[in-house]
Length: 178
Image 1 (tube, one colour):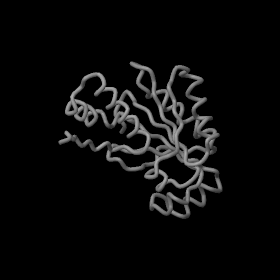
Image 2 (cartoon, rainbow, N blue to C red):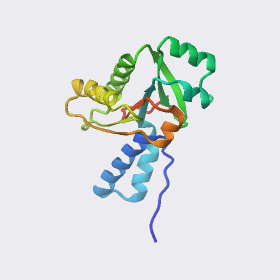
Image 3 (cartoon, helix red, strand yellow):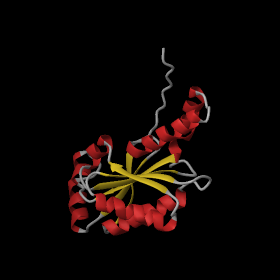
Image 4 (cartoon, rainbow, N blue to C red):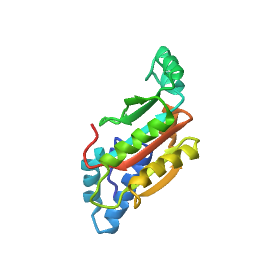
């Protein structure tokens, strides 16, 4: 006789994890299941995702990038930064020319958008490069030393679209993602 509420998160991987952690906090603070589910539905677009990858092959396989664009991108060392749109679909946000610049760009955006009304809690996920994930963590901590940042393996859903060499950051932002 369990009480169940369904929430369409329109999120992936670590953003869903942050939503679950937020729901647990709300329930521990005495919020009803219905109030928690309603809050998550109302605020689901405030849980943001940014990710980058160095291998464009999986974007080609998924129909998100043409073969010729992928070939040019590989030749020019293009590192796309991708996000999840309000409908829950992957979309390109911008391009950089190296992993270092890509990580800095993601850190800059996250730092600009993170909620400032409570301690920052972020998740960094990686498909197979712990060193790159640690670099991203250090970029955030350099500007936000009290942030709580966990590094985890990337979720299988996101990994199936991006393949290896993907690094992602997830956080709760001040405004809904566009």
